[in-house]
Amino acid sequence: MKDTAAQCMVVATLIATIVFAAGFTLPGGYDQNNGLPMFGPRSALVVFVIADAISLIFSSTSVLIFLSILTSRYAERDFLESLPKKLMFGLGTLFLSIVTMMIAFGSSFFLLYHKNQKWIPYMVAGFAAIPVILFAFLQSRLLLDVFYSSYRSRYLFKPKETHALRLENHCNFFPRCNSKFLLMVDNAHT
Image (cartoon, rainbow, N blue to C red; front, side, top):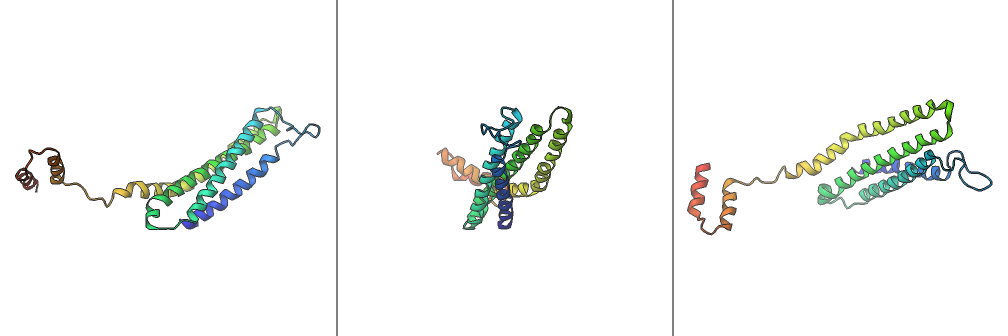
């Protein structure tokens, strides 16, 4: 778990660095006269800026979550509850940062290529989906294993309640129930 967290933290840090720089170097640059973006009010620029900001937020969140995994006490209780939840949440935020980074990347091509070359941004946007799908496919097994080990195996070693124990709990609520009745029911089920 420690190695996975360390490697995912490196990836999240790289994404945060890239999208931070991309937020200040907008596609098309700035107008030298007034300092505003060249592609001003176009919807693709708005999509680029919002997706870039969301990617920065998710990747920074992912870095902090993976850092909390690396600096954990690694106690037995942490392995049962805290660390698997942090790993799932960290992988989820890393995935969302990759998705929004690819959306920002694809929207920049819609800004740069116009009318007679519309096929280029559509092709780039289609290819930008490949890393998202690949990450989801490759990390889904890890995410499912962590989920099942956290939530499904929790009840694996919990003792099952017997029929006599249920009747005894039932008799605690009803004072007329007696121990002869419990013994009789318990002997009938054995």
